[in-house]
Amino acid sequence: MDSSILILTDEPLERDRRVIQSIAEYPNTQIVFIQDHKSISDYRIYVIALWLMLRALFGALPMLKNLIGLRKQYSKQWFWSGVPAAWRSLCRAVNMGQNMKGAEFVHAHDLYCAVAALLIAPRVHSFIYDSHEVQFHRNRKSGILRALIEVGLEKQILQAANEVRVVNYAIADLMRKLYRNMPPVRVLYNDFYASHELAAPPAESHAALVYVGKGLSGRMLEVLDRPRQELGAEVFLFHLGASVPKHISGQDWHIGPVDYEAALIQIAQSRRCLMWCCHDDICLSYKYAIPNKFFQALALGMPVVALHGTYLAEIVDEFELGPVYKKGESLGPILQLVGSGLFEHWRANGVKFLENIRSGELKI
Image (tube, rainbow, N blue to C red; front, side, top):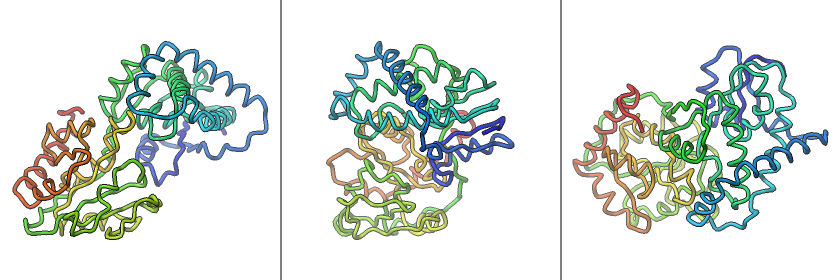
């Protein structure tokens, strides 16, 4: 695997616009997928993986008190939950790292790709760690032991990297509080969508709630799983080929195509739409998330709905970009506002907000 510029990822390219954007930054790149390195025949891979895991645990011990506090607040998993999955990911990462040669520049997306880059970091000119979310506290079955392992791995990565990229300033501040030594931090928003100047549909137009994304777990879609007459709005789901969780019927939902952008624009022109940007407040990754669909909504002049208590809700409330939903409450009062002048106010604020973000005048 000889190339001067390597981009490491654990997702197919069509799923991750952030990876695609990084590819566009460099000429003559080689894309390396961690899934391509599953077959392990060399026992030394396991030895290196075990050494990295033990080193990670030792390095994370000073942060144990903070992590236990997070576990009590957000998680109810067993102490060792998720460790086998972390071990498999670590072994694949080490296997990938052992096969990389001759690289001068490495751009690693997410934690375990960065572990692979860590193994060759002393031999490369530049190592960028692109963290798409809070890596050690995500929506998965993980206990405090896995959190310790992944905090320790990320600590090693940050000590070796020349630059770390994150999706917002709140996550940058969180990482600075957790880790003492940080490389230069660059905030790169998930703003990947061209703006469209669409006129607001008339006040008497149908109200609609829209969701876009392959991630369907932890997105509070259960709140929308009601007959249209009861909910008070149509629901449009663009799940991009993902499977809807079994406990959700979605009988009254409109399911959009995988190639969805033209259909999304058409809906935004014909209905008064709100983009559903709610995440269960069960992990730090969701609490601090500013998802792609938030920027996509603003680019279409579409207000967003965020969950009370999240960082996104703070932004939506401060800049008046849409309504804030409180868990357990009815959506009725929110949907009644869609037919009012407040809808146009949200849309206008969204256009100005996006302009200020792109000019650098505003930072979030």
